[in-house]
Amino acid sequence: MIKDVCVHLDGTAEDDGRLDHGAMIADLFGAHLVGVYTNKIGVMMFPATDFGGASAEILTEMIADSRRAGDGVEKRLRARCATLPTPMDFRRIDEADYLLGWAVANLARSTDLFVMSRPWGPGKAKRWPDLVESALFDGGRAVYLVPPESKTARMPKTILVGWRDSREATRVLTEALPFLKRASSVILAMVDEHGAPDRFKDVPAAGIVRHLDRHGVKAELRRVSGWTHASDGLLNEARLCGADLLVMGGYGHSRFREWIMGGNSRAILTECTLPVLMAH
Image (cartoon, rainbow, N blue to C red; front, side, top):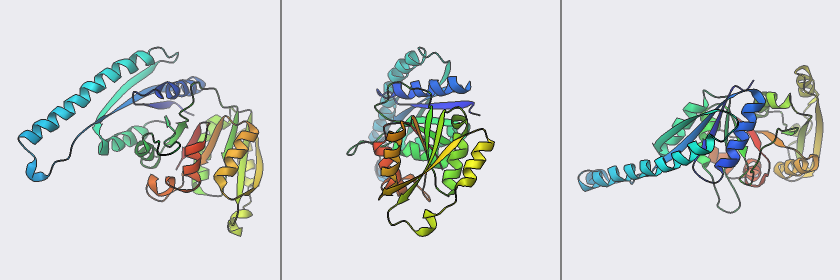
């Protein structure tokens, strides 16, 4: 069950969409909701020989300016959170860029789900990719990624799962079970990528369907063929079935940038117009 939901807040217009999704999830599961405002402290790096005197004063003033700016954002965010139908706690993290990730990962470990923005968009648009990395890989919990154009949230009735025979897919399927049990339709899509090794094309999947059935989830297995890239196949299948939520594993060996800068995950987290539930 989902009993703790964190929502990332940063003072931008996208806070409204994330808050709506977080409140919807908390209401759906009767979960505790926490809004987490990350205020990045702007600091300038000085050579060791220059640190002191005027440099120290500049650094102190920069930190003070960042905190003062954060005070104004916090006031607006608290007022917005007070309008939600679901009661929520408010937390604020003031840290330099390189420490925010550690703080978010630490917080993620004591929650069931972290609601954040989809990290990429067309061109060079990005939204806190390092924090998504920290929550997903270092926090050890699932992340629920909201598309930037999302203004209102609705309970996911049709859920599309990108399934493959892997640890990551199994992990995210377990994290998604609370959603799957409440869905009207669950579709497991296995995408046959052009040129994929034969050992990935004939993976038996009946076992995972039986496993879900024992959990009370009736799932339909679909083999999606004719696509060069799995991301294109999944996005097309999501449109065809009218999915409200896409569930997929977060693949990578060490760091977010290794896999998100190219391939299927990057494409989905750049183009997908529906929420994505991911786990690693």
